[in-house]
Length: 551
Image 1 (cartoon, rainbow, N blue to C red):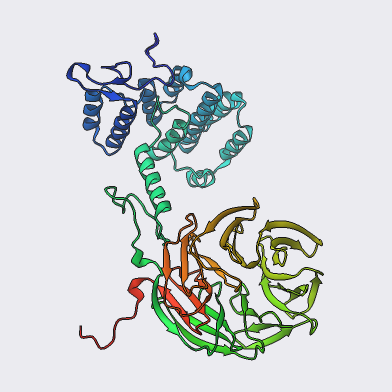
Image 2 (cartoon, rainbow, N blue to C red):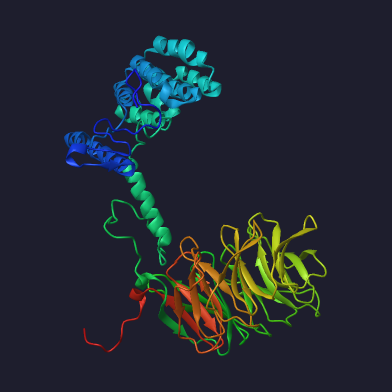
């Protein structure tokens, strides 16, 4: 409907001729556009006009009976781009019935006067700028703090200083386009389309396709300039770390644990053979090479925790180990940390600043220590089998024999319930955002918990989890993937949002005890097993080439 001043009421469709009750077009020739199609035509028209195809846009609008923008809005935009501020202000008053709240008009007027003021300053018209400040901006009584800031720009000695202090591009098309985009956010889309709306929708579609891509594991973004709109985005499965790159047999007994260093350049593996082996990572070939062997762990090595500096690590033994080993892997200097021969210290974790760590065990021993192994604090009566230090630098998450995870703050002697399971928690880890916890639960499998909302998010299918200690991991560029060992000798990989595995990796011949995903080189995954081997998984193009084959 049109009012007497020729303006469409708020929410009315932007089509002018050939209108019918439910659509628009040329009724005589059987041409008909429903409301969604009208919007599509407007989006295409805006794109054509932005690309300089003005005549094509006009032809499309004329034939479809649609209107790209409201005439008053088009006039307003032209006056803003021309820097005709008095006419732009008059246009605002004409647009007022379409905008609803007066606060929109006030903010839009403020933005226009701000641009007018800055342009006067740049031109050296100080008195004109002062007039705008005193007689136009100040009386609005809007955004007083910004008005005070604008007044300080009067003291700029030259144009360069003005542009630097204001972070403004100066008088011209670019700054006025920025202004117009801000103003446009206050106009209903029925009156004027948001800037570059078609490109925005296409970018959103690409983002959704990336989210739905089950194997997307790259830091490289997907943009309109590179992607094809003719097919959906899909990452090739061959680029995912599901192919055996290397099998290492340097341990002479069951391998219980593996962990990449925080900087991604080293891997530590712990074994029943009483050794920790440190491996150098070659991200180009996706392979490991032996760096050094740390010997003397009398009861074997069942758990390892890296210091954030990627130089120190702590190694823990299995159930009956009364001590942990604190190593500097570069100097091979180690320190045994123990309080009593009755201790059974099976787990450990570093605080995020790397100056303190916690150790615990199933006999009720739970300590916080410094780098010299001195016990700073202790917590009595907590039978701990898993630990993690949160990013706040003080909270320690501990899984215990009551099938729960609680948060402990040693300095405040405070604790709180976080997670309660119905079955024993064999191991757990937390993602880098400190929001999600991944649990391996006896007879149940792998569970994902939200530790902020304290709720179970997802149960992952396929894995065989009995009463062996199996360690799972988050992985991928954005930690969108989860991998776990299994008692059926396989490695399972899931996308974090899907319960069903996207890959099942075969090769081990006994229980897979632990999986570690490289935190820096995301195309690299490692698993260790009771079959005494370490397997490196990578993309297909990293697989070793067959030897003895003629090229």
